[in-house]
Length: 311
Image (tube, rainbow, N blue to C red):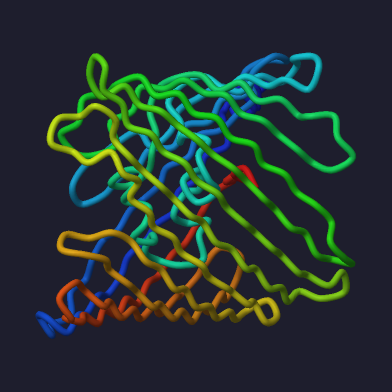
Protein backbone atom coordinates (compact mmCIF):
# COMPACT_ATOMS: atom_id res chain seq x y z
CA UNK A 1 0.00 0.00 0.00
CA UNK A 2 1.72 3.24 -1.08
CA UNK A 3 -0.24 5.19 1.58
CA UNK A 4 0.76 2.94 4.50
CA UNK A 5 3.56 5.24 5.67
CA UNK A 6 1.27 8.26 5.48
CA UNK A 7 -1.43 6.52 7.51
CA UNK A 8 1.11 5.81 10.26
CA UNK A 9 1.85 9.52 10.72
CA UNK A 10 0.30 11.25 13.75
CA UNK A 11 -1.92 14.31 13.50
CA UNK A 12 0.46 17.27 13.22
CA UNK A 13 -0.45 20.87 14.01
CA UNK A 14 1.17 24.22 14.69
CA UNK A 15 -0.33 27.23 16.46
CA UNK A 16 1.52 30.54 16.17
CA UNK A 17 1.16 33.60 18.36
CA UNK A 18 2.64 37.09 17.87
CA UNK A 19 1.81 40.38 19.63
CA UNK A 20 2.35 44.13 19.43
CA UNK A 21 2.68 45.46 23.00
CA UNK A 22 2.55 48.98 24.48
CA UNK A 23 2.65 50.25 28.06
CA UNK A 24 2.54 53.66 29.68
CA UNK A 25 5.95 53.19 31.29
CA UNK A 26 8.09 52.92 28.14
CA UNK A 27 5.48 54.45 25.79
CA UNK A 28 7.11 52.57 22.92
CA UNK A 29 5.52 49.75 20.89
CA UNK A 30 7.28 46.38 20.89
CA UNK A 31 6.72 43.33 18.69
CA UNK A 32 6.78 40.02 20.56
CA UNK A 33 6.95 36.49 19.26
CA UNK A 34 4.93 34.81 22.01
CA UNK A 35 4.93 31.12 21.11
CA UNK A 36 4.67 28.46 18.44
CA UNK A 37 3.05 25.28 19.74
CA UNK A 38 3.77 22.12 17.75
CA UNK A 39 1.33 19.28 18.41
CA UNK A 40 1.76 15.56 17.66
CA UNK A 41 -1.25 13.38 18.46
CA UNK A 42 -2.21 9.80 17.60
CA UNK A 43 -3.65 6.56 18.91
CA UNK A 44 -0.76 4.23 19.81
CA UNK A 45 -2.74 0.98 19.91
CA UNK A 46 -6.11 -0.21 21.28
CA UNK A 47 -4.89 0.57 24.80
CA UNK A 48 -3.20 4.02 24.61
CA UNK A 49 -3.26 7.34 22.81
CA UNK A 50 -0.33 9.76 22.90
CA UNK A 51 -0.24 13.56 22.87
CA UNK A 52 2.89 15.72 22.71
CA UNK A 53 3.08 19.52 22.60
CA UNK A 54 6.38 21.34 22.08
CA UNK A 55 6.58 25.07 22.76
CA UNK A 56 8.93 27.32 20.81
CA UNK A 57 9.43 30.84 22.16
CA UNK A 58 12.05 33.57 21.94
CA UNK A 59 13.60 32.35 25.19
CA UNK A 60 13.54 28.55 24.88
CA UNK A 61 12.28 25.37 23.31
CA UNK A 62 10.45 23.21 25.84
CA UNK A 63 8.21 20.16 26.02
CA UNK A 64 4.97 21.65 27.28
CA UNK A 65 3.27 18.26 27.61
CA UNK A 66 4.00 14.71 26.46
CA UNK A 67 1.84 11.93 27.83
CA UNK A 68 -0.13 8.78 27.10
CA UNK A 69 -3.74 8.19 28.10
CA UNK A 70 -5.39 4.82 28.57
CA UNK A 71 -8.34 3.87 26.36
CA UNK A 72 -9.65 0.63 27.79
CA UNK A 73 -9.66 0.59 31.61
CA UNK A 74 -12.80 -0.72 33.35
CA UNK A 75 -15.05 0.86 36.00
CA UNK A 76 -14.84 4.40 34.63
CA UNK A 77 -11.10 4.63 35.31
CA UNK A 78 -8.51 6.35 33.13
CA UNK A 79 -4.74 6.61 33.52
CA UNK A 80 -2.48 9.37 32.23
CA UNK A 81 1.33 9.14 32.45
CA UNK A 82 4.12 11.39 31.23
CA UNK A 83 4.62 15.15 31.54
CA UNK A 84 1.36 17.09 31.81
CA UNK A 85 -0.34 20.06 33.40
CA UNK A 86 -1.51 19.25 36.91
CA UNK A 87 -5.28 18.67 37.32
CA UNK A 88 -5.60 21.75 39.56
CA UNK A 89 -8.35 24.19 38.67
CA UNK A 90 -9.63 24.81 35.13
CA UNK A 91 -7.24 27.44 33.81
CA UNK A 92 -4.06 25.63 34.86
CA UNK A 93 -4.93 22.69 32.60
CA UNK A 94 -5.52 24.75 29.45
CA UNK A 95 -3.07 25.84 26.77
CA UNK A 96 -2.83 29.58 26.00
CA UNK A 97 -4.56 29.24 22.62
CA UNK A 98 -7.65 27.78 24.33
CA UNK A 99 -8.05 30.77 26.65
CA UNK A 100 -10.14 33.78 25.65
CA UNK A 101 -7.80 36.35 27.23
CA UNK A 102 -4.17 36.93 26.26
CA UNK A 103 -2.48 37.25 29.64
CA UNK A 104 -3.01 34.80 32.49
CA UNK A 105 -4.56 36.21 35.69
CA UNK A 106 -2.12 37.49 38.33
CA UNK A 107 -3.41 35.01 40.90
CA UNK A 108 -2.10 32.07 38.86
CA UNK A 109 1.31 33.05 40.26
CA UNK A 110 0.25 31.43 43.55
CA UNK A 111 0.39 28.07 41.75
CA UNK A 112 3.45 28.55 39.52
CA UNK A 113 5.27 31.06 37.34
CA UNK A 114 3.45 29.75 34.26
CA UNK A 115 1.53 26.56 35.04
CA UNK A 116 1.76 23.84 37.65
CA UNK A 117 3.02 20.84 35.68
CA UNK A 118 5.58 18.05 35.64
CA UNK A 119 6.22 14.37 35.06
CA UNK A 120 3.98 11.92 36.86
CA UNK A 121 0.78 9.89 36.78
CA UNK A 122 -2.87 10.89 37.01
CA UNK A 123 -5.67 8.44 37.78
CA UNK A 124 -9.18 9.72 37.07
CA UNK A 125 -12.54 8.13 37.90
CA UNK A 126 -15.81 8.96 36.17
CA UNK A 127 -18.09 8.84 39.21
CA UNK A 128 -21.39 7.01 38.49
CA UNK A 129 -23.73 9.91 39.32
CA UNK A 130 -26.75 11.30 37.41
CA UNK A 131 -24.61 14.38 36.57
CA UNK A 132 -21.05 14.49 35.24
CA UNK A 133 -18.55 14.08 38.08
CA UNK A 134 -14.87 13.22 37.72
CA UNK A 135 -12.30 12.67 40.46
CA UNK A 136 -8.55 13.05 39.78
CA UNK A 137 -5.67 11.84 41.96
CA UNK A 138 -2.22 12.71 40.62
CA UNK A 139 1.40 12.43 41.72
CA UNK A 140 3.92 14.62 39.89
CA UNK A 141 7.37 16.11 40.25
CA UNK A 142 6.81 19.86 39.91
CA UNK A 143 9.07 22.93 39.89
CA UNK A 144 6.59 25.84 40.25
CA UNK A 145 9.08 28.71 40.02
CA UNK A 146 12.29 29.31 38.11
CA UNK A 147 15.16 27.90 40.13
CA UNK A 148 13.00 25.40 42.04
CA UNK A 149 14.08 21.78 42.06
CA UNK A 150 11.47 19.27 40.89
CA UNK A 151 9.86 17.77 43.99
CA UNK A 152 7.01 15.35 44.60
CA UNK A 153 3.54 16.92 44.52
CA UNK A 154 0.22 15.25 45.24
CA UNK A 155 -2.88 16.70 43.55
CA UNK A 156 -6.59 15.97 44.00
CA UNK A 157 -9.47 17.45 42.02
CA UNK A 158 -13.23 16.94 41.85
CA UNK A 159 -14.99 18.52 38.86
CA UNK A 160 -18.74 18.42 38.29
CA UNK A 161 -21.04 19.71 35.53
CA UNK A 162 -24.78 20.31 35.77
CA UNK A 163 -27.41 21.21 33.18
CA UNK A 164 -29.12 24.31 34.58
CA UNK A 165 -31.40 25.15 31.66
CA UNK A 166 -31.89 24.89 27.93
CA UNK A 167 -28.39 25.35 26.48
CA UNK A 168 -26.83 26.24 29.86
CA UNK A 169 -24.16 24.27 31.75
CA UNK A 170 -22.65 24.98 35.17
CA UNK A 171 -19.27 23.57 36.19
CA UNK A 172 -18.02 23.48 39.79
CA UNK A 173 -14.53 22.31 40.74
CA UNK A 174 -12.51 21.85 43.93
CA UNK A 175 -8.73 21.27 43.93
CA UNK A 176 -6.02 20.65 46.50
CA UNK A 177 -2.29 19.93 46.33
CA UNK A 178 0.68 19.40 48.65
CA UNK A 179 4.30 19.79 47.53
CA UNK A 180 7.26 18.39 49.46
CA UNK A 181 9.50 21.46 49.81
CA UNK A 182 12.19 19.75 51.94
CA UNK A 183 12.24 17.11 54.69
CA UNK A 184 9.43 18.10 57.03
CA UNK A 185 8.49 21.20 54.95
CA UNK A 186 5.46 21.52 52.69
CA UNK A 187 3.60 23.83 50.32
CA UNK A 188 -0.20 23.52 50.41
CA UNK A 189 -2.51 24.74 47.64
CA UNK A 190 -6.30 24.93 47.60
CA UNK A 191 -8.64 26.16 44.90
CA UNK A 192 -12.22 26.44 43.79
CA UNK A 193 -13.56 27.25 40.32
CA UNK A 194 -16.89 28.03 38.67
CA UNK A 195 -17.76 27.94 34.97
CA UNK A 196 -21.08 28.85 33.36
CA UNK A 197 -21.74 28.58 29.63
CA UNK A 198 -24.98 29.67 28.00
CA UNK A 199 -25.44 28.84 24.33
CA UNK A 200 -28.93 28.67 22.84
CA UNK A 201 -29.22 25.56 20.63
CA UNK A 202 -30.24 27.61 17.58
CA UNK A 203 -27.47 30.23 17.85
CA UNK A 204 -23.73 30.55 17.28
CA UNK A 205 -23.53 33.18 20.01
CA UNK A 206 -22.67 32.20 23.57
CA UNK A 207 -21.77 33.63 26.97
CA UNK A 208 -19.20 32.19 29.36
CA UNK A 209 -18.69 33.34 32.94
CA UNK A 210 -15.83 31.87 34.96
CA UNK A 211 -13.98 32.49 38.21
CA UNK A 212 -11.25 30.87 40.29
CA UNK A 213 -9.99 31.31 43.83
CA UNK A 214 -6.51 30.14 44.90
CA UNK A 215 -4.92 29.87 48.33
CA UNK A 216 -1.33 28.96 49.24
CA UNK A 217 0.58 28.44 52.46
CA UNK A 218 3.96 27.07 53.49
CA UNK A 219 4.29 24.74 56.49
CA UNK A 220 7.42 24.57 58.67
CA UNK A 221 9.47 26.56 56.14
CA UNK A 222 11.96 28.81 58.00
CA UNK A 223 11.17 32.56 57.93
CA UNK A 224 7.90 32.04 56.02
CA UNK A 225 4.54 32.79 57.72
CA UNK A 226 2.12 29.85 57.79
CA UNK A 227 -0.96 31.93 56.96
CA UNK A 228 -2.74 31.48 53.62
CA UNK A 229 -2.10 33.89 50.74
CA UNK A 230 -5.19 34.29 48.57
CA UNK A 231 -5.92 35.51 45.07
CA UNK A 232 -8.86 35.33 42.69
CA UNK A 233 -10.21 36.37 39.31
CA UNK A 234 -13.58 36.53 37.57
CA UNK A 235 -14.34 37.10 33.91
CA UNK A 236 -17.09 37.11 31.32
CA UNK A 237 -16.78 36.61 27.56
CA UNK A 238 -19.56 37.00 25.01
CA UNK A 239 -19.18 35.77 21.45
CA UNK A 240 -21.81 37.41 19.29
CA UNK A 241 -22.11 35.35 16.13
CA UNK A 242 -19.30 33.48 14.44
CA UNK A 243 -16.85 36.36 14.02
CA UNK A 244 -16.73 38.71 17.02
CA UNK A 245 -16.37 38.57 20.78
CA UNK A 246 -15.79 40.81 23.79
CA UNK A 247 -14.88 40.18 27.40
CA UNK A 248 -13.94 41.72 30.74
CA UNK A 249 -12.01 40.41 33.75
CA UNK A 250 -11.30 41.61 37.28
CA UNK A 251 -8.54 40.08 39.40
CA UNK A 252 -6.73 40.47 42.71
CA UNK A 253 -3.49 38.85 43.86
CA UNK A 254 -0.88 39.33 46.59
CA UNK A 255 2.13 41.44 45.62
CA UNK A 256 5.23 42.75 47.32
CA UNK A 257 4.09 45.48 49.69
CA UNK A 258 0.39 44.63 49.54
CA UNK A 259 -2.13 43.59 46.90
CA UNK A 260 -2.33 44.14 43.15
CA UNK A 261 -5.60 44.61 41.29
CA UNK A 262 -6.18 44.46 37.56
CA UNK A 263 -9.08 45.28 35.23
CA UNK A 264 -8.91 43.82 31.71
CA UNK A 265 -10.97 44.49 28.59
CA UNK A 266 -10.88 42.33 25.44
CA UNK A 267 -12.11 42.59 21.85
CA UNK A 268 -11.78 39.61 19.50
CA UNK A 269 -12.22 39.13 15.75
CA UNK A 270 -12.26 35.59 14.37
CA UNK A 271 -12.14 35.62 10.54
CA UNK A 272 -12.28 31.80 10.70
CA UNK A 273 -11.89 28.98 13.22
CA UNK A 274 -8.16 28.94 12.41
CA UNK A 275 -7.34 32.61 12.97
CA UNK A 276 -7.95 35.02 15.83
CA UNK A 277 -7.08 38.70 16.26
CA UNK A 278 -7.45 40.17 19.76
CA UNK A 279 -6.97 43.55 21.40
CA UNK A 280 -6.51 43.46 25.17
CA UNK A 281 -6.15 46.51 27.42
CA UNK A 282 -5.41 46.19 31.14
CA UNK A 283 -5.06 48.67 34.00
CA UNK A 284 -3.18 47.67 37.15
CA UNK A 285 -3.55 49.22 40.59
CA UNK A 286 -0.22 48.56 42.33
CA UNK A 287 0.64 48.61 46.04
CA UNK A 288 1.42 52.15 47.16
CA UNK A 289 -1.12 53.79 44.84
CA UNK A 290 0.73 53.54 41.52
CA UNK A 291 -1.03 52.53 38.30
CA UNK A 292 0.04 50.91 35.03
CA UNK A 293 -1.65 50.66 31.64
CA UNK A 294 -0.84 47.95 29.07
CA UNK A 295 -2.22 47.19 25.60
CA UNK A 296 -1.67 44.06 23.48
CA UNK A 297 -2.66 43.49 19.85
CA UNK A 298 -2.33 39.79 19.08
CA UNK A 299 -2.51 37.54 16.02
CA UNK A 300 -2.99 33.79 16.48
CA UNK A 301 -3.22 31.20 13.71
CA UNK A 302 -3.43 27.44 13.51
CA UNK A 303 -2.56 24.92 10.82
CA UNK A 304 -2.90 21.16 10.73
CA UNK A 305 -5.11 18.74 12.66
CA UNK A 306 -5.13 19.88 16.28
CA UNK A 307 -7.24 17.65 18.50
CA UNK A 308 -9.47 19.10 21.20
CA UNK A 309 -7.98 19.69 24.65
CA UNK A 310 -9.89 18.63 27.79
CA UNK A 311 -13.02 20.74 28.32
